[in-house]
Amino acid sequence: MVAKTVILLALTFVPYAIILTGTLSPLAMLGLAVVMGVGLAGIGFSVSHDALHGAYSSRPWVNRIIGLSFDLCGANGYMWKITHNVIHHTYTNIEGIDEDLTVSPLLRLSPSADHRRFHRFQHLYAFGAYSLSTLFWVFVKDYKYFMQRDLGPYRNRKHPRSEIATLVVTKLIYYTWAIALPLWLLPIPWWQVLIGFVVVHLTAGLILGVIFQLAHVVEGTDYPAPDAEGQMEHAWMVHEMATTSNFGRGNRLLCWYVGGLNFQVEHHLFPRTCSVHYPALSPIVEEVARKYGMPYHAQPTLRAAIASHYRMLRKLGQAA
Image (cartoon, rainbow, N blue to C red):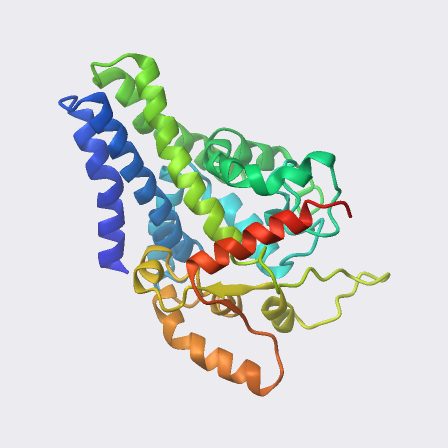
């Protein structure tokens, strides 16, 4: 985990430092912006995600410090713990509660979600929408959630002043290093700096958006709904196995880069276990699941998972 952290931070900030020298052509800087986007997504997958789950280290203070990598990359760790760790991991694939199903009104990711005529074409534009996700995150999403009183199952949620202060300070730090410093130091027009900034986020957003959707919006996973009394049919652990899918478990590079997010079944069952252990846990969980007749969803490769997600987008885009 430590080696991975160093490598992914370097993959993001070494190209950034080279760009700031101002010695490269605009085309070369654009190429490094793509590399930065790959590194930024990797930090989110393999560094921040584990730390914010308390899984990076057995020491809480280490998780707290490493988790700040999320904030310094433009997102907000406190809000992520609410919307992801609590809401998504507890109410997975439940329409109206799981925030991951409402990433954009342009996308219909659940069979019980409202249907709009333009959803018929979502399989054609969804991946483009995913690429805008981190731009929306750093400029809109966190502020929107902080101002919402109702969030998932929470009603009239009030946030600590210390977390509001952290949001403001870390956003300013991010805007400074990602936008202000390049505008100040680089001998190029402002619009070229803007293009580089957008390319970083288009790259990171596409990678992050696709990988996270492959865990739940694929063929075979369920979308359970509560009964008239608000009760779910299955216990939480069975619910997680029914709504979650793995992919590309034999791809070692993928496992390394996405921090075990291709082992989503194991991650949802054991979210405080470090992702480096998921490849070893997976065959054990699968064996026990088969033995007791529990669902265990898995796509064989990354390509197969993307194809399955594409087919699901097309299916969900049809009229209800």
